[in-house]
Amino acid sequence: MPSKPPDSFISIAEAYGKRDSLPLNIIGVCSDFLPQAKSRGTDYTTKLHLWDESCRGAPNLDPDGLLVRYFHKETSGLPAIENAGDIVLLHNIKLKNLGSSWLAMSNHDTTWTVVSMTVLIGSADAESLAKIECRSGGKVGAIVPKPDLQQLKYAQSMLYMKNPDSLRASAKRTSLDVAGTIASGGGVAPSVREKFKLFKELCDPQSIRGNQFADLLGEVRKVYDSANNVVEVQLTDYTEHRLLREYTKPETGKDGDKFGYIKPKEFWHGPYGRMVMTIMAWDEHGSYVRQLMRGQQIELGMYMKLKNVQIKMDKNGGQLEGHLRGSGSSFGSGISLHRPREAEFDDKIKALLQRKREYKLNSQAEGTGMHQVDGSAEKRKADVQAPDDVQKPAKKSKKAKKRERERREAEAAAAEVAKLPANQHVKTQAIDIPLSSIASILDLESLARKTPAGNPYYLPFQNNKYKAKVEVIDFFPDNIEDFATPYRLSEYSVLEDYDSADDEEVSFEFAATNPKAVWWSWHFVLFVRDPPRSSAEKGDNKDIMLLQVHSKEGDHLLRAEACDLRKEPQELAKLKEKLFVLWGDLAERKIAGGRHEDMQIEAGT
Image (cartoon, rainbow, N blue to C red):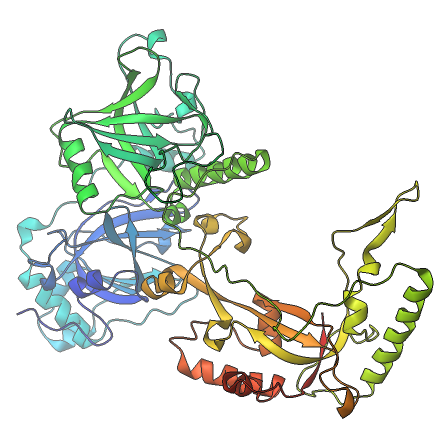
């Protein structure tokens, strides 16, 4: 039985099972590691495997242990491992899913401590353990505590359980590491041949001698298993090549029939133009893709990295295509799947994501946007309508005298409303703006204009800021639990110029099954009207206005951030208390089917 990890630490197998959880503390034997090197970006990085007794026989876990990738701005901030067998303690480490594998990834708050294997083995008693010197670092400015006696004894026990023959010496320095060292010394690093290519950078096979091989990265647009023992993958990297097949936008119009007897034709979902290459996966590569398809691990919209793809013309000699053939390498080693969120750590994926967004924006402007193929959850489409007992206001006369009379009446009504008591719990920031009545706000004549030739026309809308004292008579949705709406985080969220407007509203069912993939925002409607100036006037006012409350507006009105109200009963109870202050017992009366209570609030719109 494996010994229990020290307090505040968990075993490596348990950490691997949590996945994408909160920051964790782990301790293990470094079974192998790579020297520190310059990353593709501005940081320095190192890789290592951490092992403890729980790794023995753990499903899906590498026999060498958990892979850890550590980044830091300075080399002094990376774990100072001298030999395989050193003990490494990591605080606030997180697990990340990078394609088909999981690994531990450092973050801004991660700290490390390294205890030398030789010093630890030579310490026989508690007194000598207490005198051990350790190396530590990580988070800038953080004070990393020295391992206590319990942690050091646990580290000793792991060393006795680890087979020394399984400890590997440090790997040789990579060309990337050597280039980083030369550059840091002021020299010019030798150029390294880049095998990675964009589609637009591929050569015409007829213009070169010999075979052309390249590493590719693209978005999966279609996958199917053909009958001749090969799997075909349609891939795009959102760059064009004149020798790729041209896809055109399908003609619009009805397809099939309303009774479902005639199935609609399948059509290409985009991108359009010469941006898509067919990749033929043979031998163990094809078997690996089939395995991913059976396990539903490959989805349209995922990113695929391919190594050593042969680029050649198809059998008809008219179009480029790629071939992945067996090479005796390990199963699936030439293919890896990735999610858009990995752009945070991979510059090539980030560049692909940026090209996709540029294509999407340009195609939308041209009216040739891509169709969604990733099973997006449907959005709420409930129509918001005024209560049945409320009639639409009659169209105002265009005569100048009548307009002037109505304007004076509206000003008089607003003056009377201003004298009514206001809800002291709702304040407006629009202090200097005069009060307006609902009738004046909804008056279509405010949109009336004339052309230079004197022809009248109406503006479609205009942006104005009003202040009104109103009575809340209804709300939508009817269920207060639905006042907060889930949104799925856009794949572009990892880009520097990300805008939350790119996020997609999803169903409550999607949010229930994917709680970590969504965020919540206020989204509800208030039906308001001018409050009655006397009891005799109560219910006579027919001018109804819809106030839509979204996102930050709801945060300010309710002084609370949106959340999943269906799973947060305490937050729901707090919200109902605030709404009672806002509109009285309107919700209870609505449930009972009674009349709405008069409740005035002062609000700036």
